[in-house]
Amino acid sequence: MNGNVIIIGATSGIGKNLALLFAEKGYHVVATGRRKNLLDELAKENQNIVSTSCFDITSENALKKIDDIILSLGKVDIFIYCAGIAILTTYPDWSSDQQMIRLNIEAFTKCSGFMFNYFLQQGYGQMVVISSIAALRGGGSAPVYNASKAFQSHLFESFNIQALQKNKNIVFTDIKPGYVDTKMAVGENKFWVMPVEKTCEQIYKAILHRKREAVVTNRWKMAAFILKFLPGFLFFRLVKKNANH
Ligand SMILES: NC(=O)c1ccc[n+]([C@@H]2O[C@H](COP(=O)([O-])OP(=O)(O)OC[C@H]3O[C@@H](n4cnc5c(N)ncnc54)[C@H](OP(=O)(O)O)[C@@H]3O)[C@@H](O)[C@H]2O)c1
Image 1 (cartoon, protein in one colour):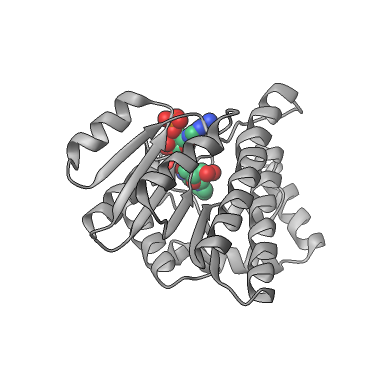
Image 2: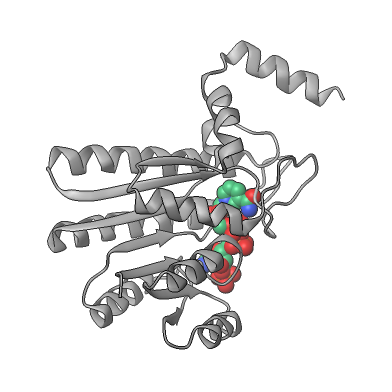
């Protein structure tokens, strides 16, 4: 066995594909999510390797569930936070914003802190978040989604600084995908929508290389570079031009 991997949000899309990929590569994978039927299907496809745990990561007992998984495994090499939600909001809408904040920020922060403390005790470990290219700039389709992804990226950068300051063998990997062909890639004007399998191959490589940050897929790297460094006045000119079309 190559090691133990826990994936939060592995019932569909990127998380499911990562679970299958890590299992295929000889890891012991624990897949989690709320939809039990999909977890059961996943376990059936990979009887020897994938075990599952069904819970809502925003629930009160989520950390207890994670603790139980860790106890059953004995050690954790890689912990992947793939659960995420994006709700399109053309006007501020608290009930949508709150759902995104609870999953993408609150539960994520709780899990990250919990795993950081666990890895400190264990002496090593890697936590991965699937943030987004949306972390790089604001966006007009789902402002709180973009803000939540920026939060994830900054928290991981800060935790990496703390791990280095402590001289510990702990890495926080921030994966920023462009558009990926899952049910989350909603809305119009999507371009360069990447197949989920190809995206996961590149995510897998970045995780194995213990990168602190990676944009996937390769064609999104240049777009990310431009997005990140484009001066504000040019960025807003571009946004305005697109809005007028
Ligand atoms: N698709 C894209 O274009 C794209 C681009 C950039 C970044 N991302 C990021 O990639 C990540 C995965 O998204 P995806 O595209 O694979 O979408 P997806 O197919 O909708 O997957 C989302 C996963 O999150 C889980 N989840 C949602 N709420 C949960 C909760 N309360 N507790 C536990 N698990 C929960 C879902 O499982 P259950 O519903 O079974 O709980 C599901 O397994 C997200 O963080 C997203 O922001 C996606």
